[in-house]
Length: 109
Image (cartoon, rainbow, N blue to C red):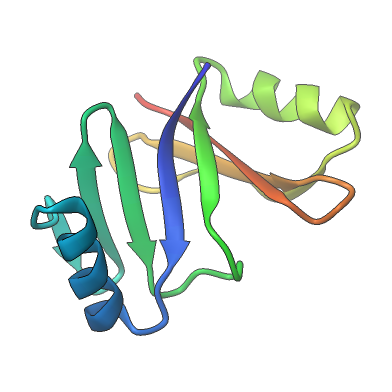
């Protein structure tokens, strides 16, 4: 399992996009009103204007998202978003630990 994506809330998408383009020294590879994405090496940075969280969420790449979610539930996490398709067969899920920190999983098709 490796961390593959960090998604930041971006209530002001244009301002946040300008900041991240400067920070990362590149233009986004995805630039849509619902999501802006940058790739730096093997890591993706995403900007989400509709994020429910107040801080970034790290997504871990897994081979079996249902099993990964169940392992964290068994360890005491609470499911925030059950595994679901966000397009093209990409599955994501988010969970919270006892302190309220959010952890994400994603499974590519």
